[in-house]
Length: 103
Image (cartoon, rainbow, N blue to C red; front, side, top):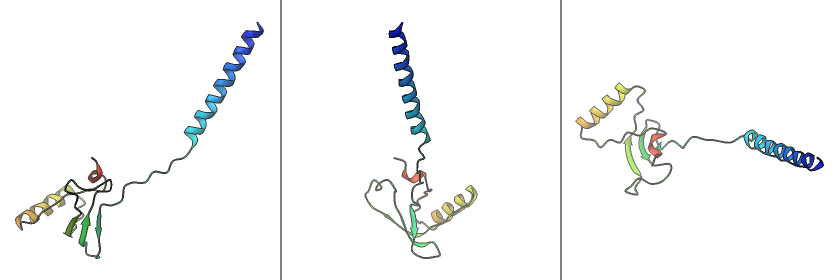
């Protein structure tokens, strides 16, 4: 009988220690930050910009130099911007803050 009590005490100690460790692991706050904005402009008019990849380089290992950055708020504005750039024979790269860095 005393062996059964000793085993139950050791099991209850183990579960108590395990519960404490789990509580500490779950209770520790983490610091998460979104990726850096890939488009950086040196002038106020969103001109003279660079477009980089926050995780690594683009496949051609080059940072894209951008003459102008446009920040559309709606899909129609994006379509209009791409249409106008296509009509003027500009090269266009569409990038968002988060999707640019997915491998």
